[in-house]
Length: 389
Ligand SMILES: Cc1ncc(COP(=O)(O)O)c(C=O)c1O
Image 1 (tube, protein in one colour):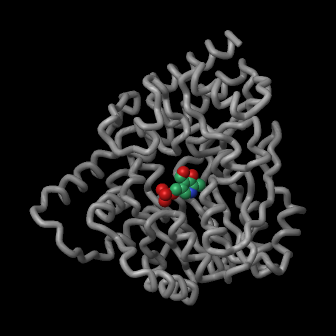
Image 2 (spheres, protein in one colour; image 1 turned 45 degrees about the vertical axis):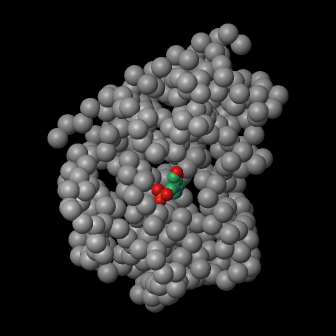
Image 3 (tube, rainbow, N blue to C red; image 1 turned 90 degrees about the horizontal axis):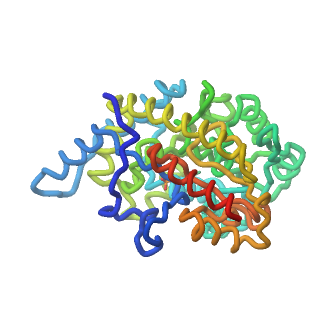
């Protein structure tokens, strides 16, 4: 099946947080929400319509199609041989992460993240009464890198009991190499630090690169980690709140299940499961291929565009998000910068401070997975507004 990602969708009927009319002025283009603006794959629409066509929506039973679908996907697409028994439902990446932290760390423990960071990582640590520790990424013309000296110091702190890895990384688009993942696994082993790996952006790795699932990097990593996945980003199905955790170690899996079982009522639902299975069981591989190719071509256009502006786009190696260094525009405050984008360009951008209060000053995060004509419109608006400054 061929998809037409150039098609501009009318999203006003949806309850989309990104397009929430209460937060958008007429004509503004929301570039702050981390989603694409393409149609869902048709097999997902069919699967959900099939469920909708039932006459009664009673208490459901589920089959092992759920576990088999994601296990098959991870093997087929990312080369990781997953036993379906390792898979558990999670109501999203962050809920899965919360259970993993509850199972593997104690209140008061220190949990390490890299900054800038997807802001719910902060919440999941602090709302679970753990203490946040941060290791800033080194961002330069050459790329985005871990600061290994700092990482080792933080892993070595006896209070640090878990590390949240985000690969591919939101907001910078950094994609880890095997060597980097191996080094994280070595630190994890040396200092007994559990790794929770958020791989929600895994299907967007560019330049012919391949995503490597963290737990697949060594036997040790497999035994002391939890990978969280969700078809939300790749297939534009975030509203179903249906993701999964993958934990190869049985003892850890059981600990997680105890935490899960304690919160009665958090369970899968019929439409979310139908969509999840359709995404992952082979019906939508063509969509994922085409979407990645399309997004990669948008990235190329944006990189060229920003070359000729005072804004520096940190080259994303993957994902459909980008981290923009806007300090060259010369605004005195972040408020002025955001207001310039919102009012002079009609573009809502993600405030860099959400990703790091200090490092994010002068930066914005955009999600650029728009139909090409819409992205062109955004670039034209930017170009005009920058020129007239
Ligand atoms: C790195 C990262 N993790 C998790 C999420 C959200 O995941 P979910 O779709 O499960 O809510 C996002 C969404 O922006 C994200 O960028």
